[in-house]
Length: 372
Image (cartoon, rainbow, N blue to C red):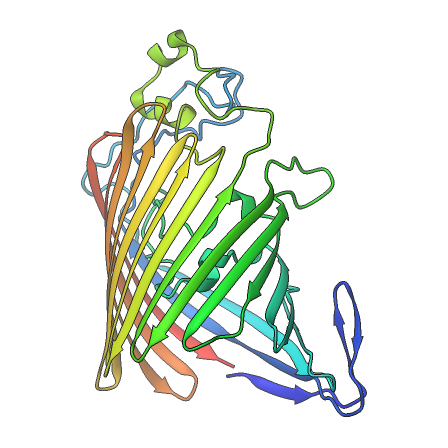
């Protein structure tokens, strides 16, 4: 539940890069809110990747500096089953903003995002800001919580070139059409960081008509580092001495180098029923990712029900093997009172990493959330 406070006509809003003073006729509104959650989670996670994390060893001197010592864990029935794990979390979020007498709107929040708006649209400045592809996506990220570390996740909504400071522009909506542009000057976050990507530009658009919305986003990032992410440093003798899984980890598991991203999405509301679908493909020098998602939501009495499906694939260019993952998630949520909700979620995760065989695990969670 958001709380609002007017800071007064003479208030000033400190916006990171400078101080924008509000004239007497303007008021800056400060909004804050958050939630606290109690969760109980059960799963039967198992990991088919190597026992070691394959990093930081001199046994392998390739581009990824990973070791050749690898042995896969067995995903035997009954192994790693967990009793309910209880946890409590809380968060507090705030934002402040208003419109100046000259018509310029200003806003900021707890993430230090600075947004300037007006008849020209909105421009947001933020470290780790949204790419245009993410800003325009109407289908969400498609991610479903699963057990264990063997998770390809949902859609890729930005390239590695958009990991630093990002400027995102949202043009004024015209007839249901929304246009987004993003610019990332470099991928480094400090003077000591190695900047491997510069001048990354993305574009996205969404269009809404009645109950249907569609979106498309594109981004390209050119790698400018001096180290290749191909298998040039992986010798035949090294490859012959390690497992297929280790080959995949050291010679093709990472998304790196030049990257090109395409994201498509659609959503539709029909009464109490909502549908969404998304598709994303990321092409890079070392590994390529393709993700498809489908979602269905409906209201039944006092309950909100959802069913989600995600199919993800990562292809290792260097070793011609793949990671495949299929996740089905179901959820239910109901209100227990003003600002208090109870939700249940269950996911079934089936995956095959680098041809090591199919494995399945589940994750179940109950959550009590209190908003304030």
